[in-house]
Image 1: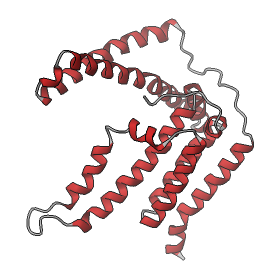
Image 2: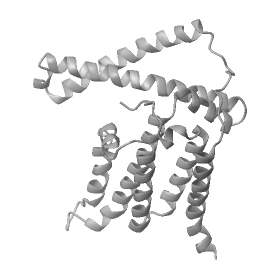
Image 3: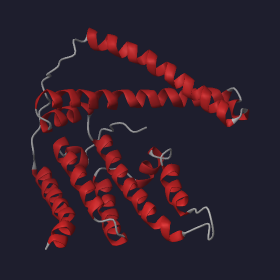
Image 4: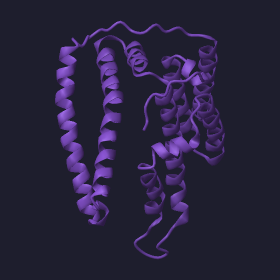
Length: 241
């Protein structure tokens, strides 16, 4: 389950703001270099960042196993034709590269979530986005990070209970209906309890943020982010020049 995992890796020591900036500039570089050579370089960089965050590629694949079929289906669907030659392999190249780029971005998201406490994410978003909008966005990020793992656990328990009662022998649409209905009921129930808990704890609109300082590791991360930004802007500069 994609949640925060305490540790002492470089990724854990980085400030949340540095990690968000790294992700943003990495995404910009990924969209600026969509060719195989650029994606190969980004793959090597992403693997290095995952290693620094103590997150293995196997963990990323396991976390996004529900998304992978959709990423794989896009190139296949794009290559299909309604007439001869029926299949156009060249048409699948662009969607395949886009799907792979999305997987790289999701890998960095997994590393961020596993190395960043929710409270630090809230404070980082509230700091980067000024005013009430930033505080509201930070609160929303915190609620999502806290609420989504609970819903995932509820769905997993529902599936296990269905399997224990021989639910695997039911048709697929019935299994989907059972899990979806149970998940929706659990979500509504937990939403009511969450609202009561927030009122009982006097949720603060402007809470005191956790202490955060930028260290040497953050300086290196900021330099890397600047390199990503420059690399992303290079194709635009080259086309203008």
